[in-house]
Image (tube, rainbow, N blue to C red; front, side):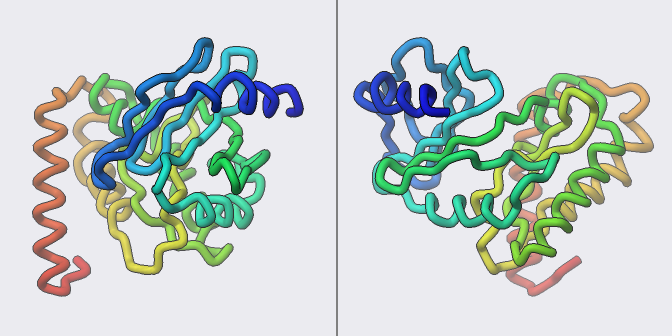
Length: 220
């Protein structure tokens, strides 16, 4: 770990350039020194990796973006669980976390690429979310891009940054319902690649429908 942290301090951070211009849009990684690679970028932070350390990732918060403290607390409560990353180290001043890397394909990309989503993975995610609730957390923003099927067919939760929010979130419940009502009976045995345009249409339609139900105070 000492050498990894040294690489962060001496090789990465002095040259790294990330920016968040809109809190509703993913941040921009303007420059990342070699051999670091970007694995993903959310609205508040970017996740990068170093080839010499394939089993860990670095999550860096953009300047001016909140959430670092909450995410550190979430990982503290979760501890070591197979469906979640584990936080090995955090730095308050530089606003980053070193996490165990999770390998797999998100449910969204499984649909996009025609990869089978096993029921075991759905059950694993259910169990993982209940585990989080038992530790005083509130699983929030659990959608198809934030959960994955790992290399051994088990389920994992990729993003826990909003698990301290207190308002209700039905995303996983609704996704799970769609899995059992539509995917399992009609697509599981013969999965097909679903075009991005159709997936985005479903996503936008869901957001519109969910907003309408929220305005009406419906929990159905």
